[in-house]
Image (cartoon, rainbow, N blue to C red; front, top):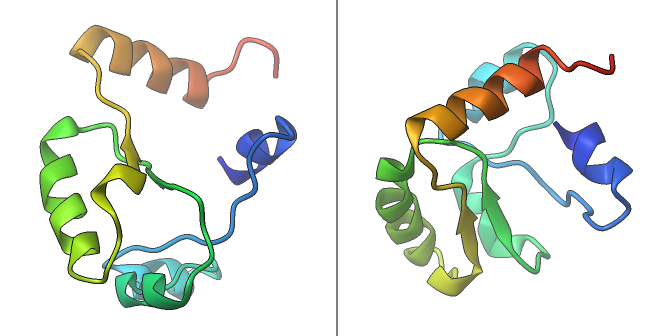
Length: 95
């Protein structure tokens, strides 16, 4: 996903945080704990999950670390659109 966003030339990924960061680190991925957001330099936070029901919880959690809720962006869409995006991401037609 990082490569796809970086390839646009419009987005710079400055970090990846997750409450289960140790699971990602275990397999060699550079993921940090949520509390590292305090020292991060960012314009916006993109919530990668496609399930809109988590947006309020994530926003509240980040707000506890001083993040402005207006800086948290999330993908909110209906089931069919979400399914199409995931299908295209997992099985791109031009790859």
